[in-house]
Image (tube, rainbow, N blue to C red):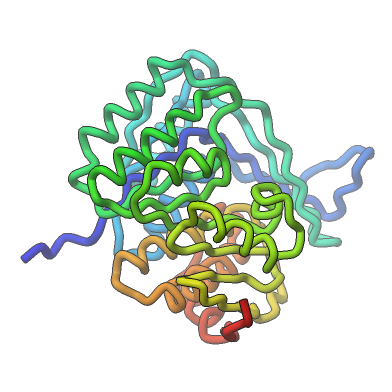
Length: 315
């Protein structure tokens, strides 16, 4: 009998060193002096792994590219946080992202530095590491966009390796989804409503879901929309999730990544998708109460989950 917790290999190829600056009143175009500064590793893959650790129940191993002084800082802090990772070194320094939080208005502004392409040999190294370790995991997650100019074969081949190994794939990305889906296998898609619109060319949510489901479709499609209603499409059954009011938002960045991590962990734990996504949304709301991306208190997440209203919608 296997008593080990389920494990997830997380491809987060585009990490960042994250700065979060808090202002009493942030004024675009003006001189702004921050009252508080935090800094930590981030990027969708890092946030996913941090959230999975907060949630418990599943372990993670992060695969990422990193380089330069910023990359060394990320690696050192991941070790401090006990986030298991395999880092493929690249020559160019890893990007820095800066979040500006206005305490007066609640507005959050994200400034993202450009990322450089990972060279073909680095892509091959990441795929080789996945190939070597995929038998030891229960799910593979693809988290976020690739560094600009990186060959999309990375995600396509990762999806093919996952399908060939008979493992489920959680895609928290919308590019290159068509190439990911051609690999076959069991795919769970978790994106936000803006990404769904970009993917399908439809701004009406139900029409966008219909268009996506008419193509080679993921097994599950979970859609978040910030504080607005979230949606889950499972076997042509559509569920709407009405979220409770969140009175205080400290930092909402990383909430989608938090939802992905908890969704994957709960699916591996055997929860029905309808319940797994509710737990994921509760954790995403709890993440908004923390200044750190992917960080939340499980007891707060459960309180939010208990107040989510789920209804079945005509589709």
